[in-house]
Length: 180
Ligand code: IMP
Ligand code: MG
Image (cartoon, rainbow, N blue to C red; front, side, top):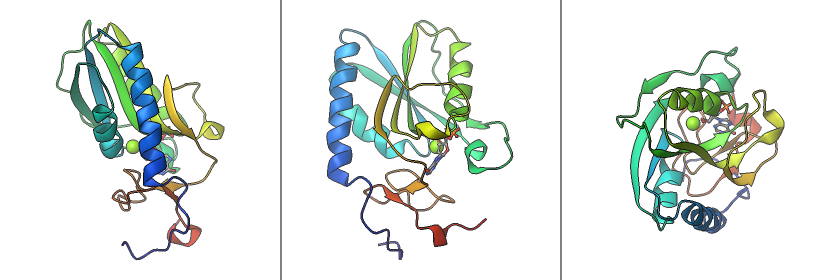
């Protein structure tokens, strides 16, 4: 499909969908009767967001925030950059932030602080993948799909240099595909 042999997926499409349905059920129960604004972090959360929203059985609206992830790519601790901010006024609203992966924690921590400054009624974080061993900022997702080892993964929204997001499964990027 993309000219690289990724070997055995870390998580198949079916495993991802099963996990998302578990998360969807938990989130739906926790937010029953509440109106939720789900904020996806582009671009990585695109597919997760789309599938998670369809697994929710509550009233939701959606918005997006587009961030760079330079902080996680060993770029010497550059601050996170917001390329496009959310459009909604979140004051007094229940906000659920949806991200593909929490690695060092810098990105989620940064976005969380920015959103908290605007006075939401509540703010929770849902991530598909949690690379807990890499954390440099103390942050825990309220909902986390899979805990993964310290390996660079691609697929289902996750990229390496903006490629491989469209893989329907999640795989470890073969070492010889990584430059630098
Ligand atoms: P953090 O700020 O270090 O937590 O990094 C979060 C961001 O880094 C995510 O939004 C991803 O875009 C990116 N990232 C971290 N680990 C991986 C990975 O294994 N594969 C693809 N992207 C990753
Ligand atoms: Mg990302």
